[in-house]
Image (cartoon, rainbow, N blue to C red; front, side, top):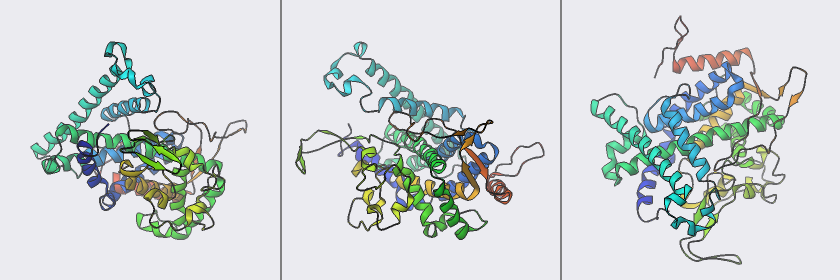
Length: 413
């Protein structure tokens, strides 16, 4: 565990400076660009929606962190970071190893403790990857190669002023991908599942979009007029939280909560699932109902001045306290613009087999691990009209390039 007083403060300060609300606003042009590609990819291959969602999330984070493109999601550096993520998913799950329940096992020598060997191998792999990505950026800067604004460049330009070592800087950058890729894409899969199971939400959302945006692509500036769309993106985080079991915290001193005495150094888990399924706070919690964030008859729509930011949002998907997700503002911007643009451009319907059988998604069929997302399910995603399909093509080509005669794209970078 990292203490508040040393390395954690230094690393967290750098990450906070890269993700604070004002900074997050500056990333909207990149989110705009990547979302245009997502719409185009769905137009071309709608059945692969989960893969396109992950490409969007990984493309955004790799661009923000290292100014590296992700066009297909099959790039080697993406595969390597996905491997790091997969290992983290397994090892960070509460109770994944017996040592989580019997701490004395940590004193076993490595040859008797498989978890130690696994941890060492995982550390060596991710350390090498994160340092290589940072060194690659350093070489580009030394050569004078053009590099866009990104976390790695910021660290290398001002790292000494932030009191971070190269190792700390490499992890501060590398872990941003871990935190932002699977969570954003998983939330989009959850949103898609909800739209299939609760079609009335789609109807109401599209009505608002048509009234506010008409035939033009929704923009970030529309947020203040798209209250229902904003509520839909919030409900996607509430209805099926990505980190269902929360993340282990530890009390730094003795504390009293109601009738409970909590000694110092006690592991505490904020169970996101249990909190988000509380029927007093969320009436009919299994129902996907964005109105719970708008109608003052719901607790989550009432004024919450003076309370922790999670309560003011109406959900706790980003965690609690000092260790809450620092990239929450970036994630919220992504979910808003994608919710708006996906529903503006497409209709989401349940898949139907050739013999007329409707394929119902199972709202409880989710993966297990540190993060949880829907298991594979089918969906039919079609343009709302040919006019919207053409608008998606134009939006894509205007930022990513026009096709050559041979069908290749001229990138606009």
